[in-house]
Image 1 (cartoon, rainbow, N blue to C red):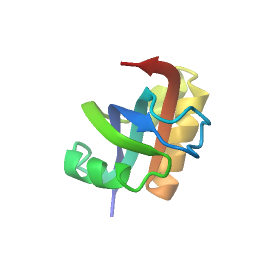
Image 2: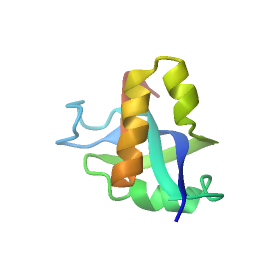
Image 3: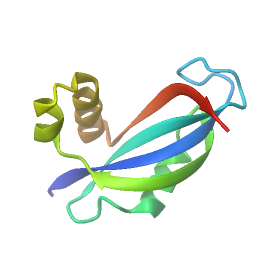
Image 4: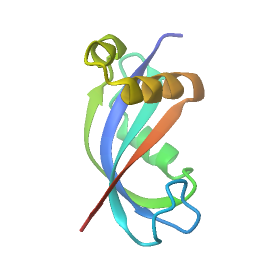
Length: 103
């Protein structure tokens, strides 16, 4: 089966014990990368299901989705994003949490 990576822009609220160590109750911008069958990268229902299993984060709000492109990511020398893409391809998903707190 062929897969591709859906890149979901979102935000989430931190819980105790989150992997980033942020205080409980803060809303942070996030990006959830999900491995999905080709042609289904924009499956928000699947994204919500996967987000619901993410320890330390709750109340995900999804805003946009795009199709990940590893060649383009690498050509921009975005090594952290390339690593996240590869992690999602290997493990099924990867969550990136940004430090800035939002309302």
